Length: 341
Ligand SMILES: NC(=O)C1=CN([C@@H]2O[C@H](COP(=O)(O)OP(=O)(O)OC[C@H]3O[C@@H](n4cnc5c(N)ncnc54)[C@H](O)[C@@H]3O)[C@@H](O)[C@H]2O)C=CC1
Ligand SMILES: O=C(CO)COP(=O)(O)O
Image 1 (spheres, rainbow, N blue to C red):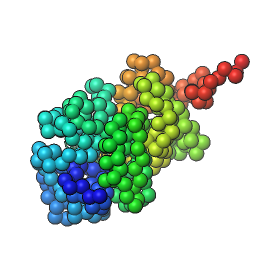
Image 2: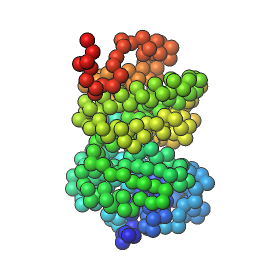
Image 3: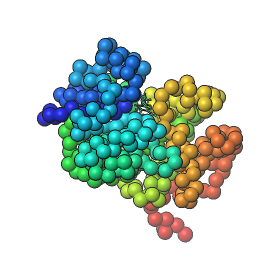
């Protein structure tokens, strides 16, 4: 059923644009808020987002807007697709408008100073709002091009999950539900770090065995950390865990993978990020995750290895040597090894 009120998408980047189009194609009227008036005007005139998702037509029911206050006033369901570095500063000044509203974060990052996930920030800013997250293997361009795609909406609020499923579910976009908001959101944030490593491995010409080892050990690491933080490890077997890890670690369309690829080609981190010109959340996540893992005593050798290369002056060969010669471990953490003598 078509919603009576418009639905808001906050963020003028590639994922906000892809999700705004999906909503509009499902018959909803959409306000896509962006900070840049020139970008909004260009979309209004050309029906294309000039910088992000070039070549994708923007549906006529998507109205680009720059007045955030009016947007939040007019809509009771908002999808938040802002970079993690901007989410708090954009929404905090409007906290009083958010009580009772449905806020769904699409952002896959961790706040630098607090180690908070985006839905935790939303909860802090707007304790009276109803909050959820959407995460999964969802490369924006493929979503916009109608590649068959699945995602997960997660919230303790079942009615919110049903509403999101109702507005987003479509011929090419399938929305699964979960009540593990923390696990789903954590999966989306953590996998970005491993995508950088995977991109690097490809640029360095490493083999298929290596790529498979990386993805599988990344999953082990992510899950170990998540369990330490109180998440349900089973969530990591789903779309928002292993699903997103696979797509981001294997696709040159992923920006985090692209940063890793550029690093593997010999670019500095600064040059790799500049060349990308879009958000790669994994760089910040790496910094905060390394510190957090150390603080809580969780063994995350891939995170520590990438951090050592990017921020501690270690060479790739030193790190590979350390990783490969590390003390042998058991394969899967959560299987009892009591059968071993
Ligand atoms: N692009 C993708 O394939 C997917 C992205 N995501 C997540 O969505 C979030 C947003 O990513 P994208 O849309 O891809 O980013 P993007 O790099 O395509 O665009 C970022 C957008 O945020 C805007 N922005 C930056 N700082 C801002 C501020 N202070 N105030 C207002 N707007 C600001 C930029 O102007 C730009 O429109 C990220 O956390 C990303 O991990 C999630 C799933 C898929
Ligand atoms: O989260 C994504 C796909 O699910 C997009 O990944 P990137 O941010 O690396 O492009």
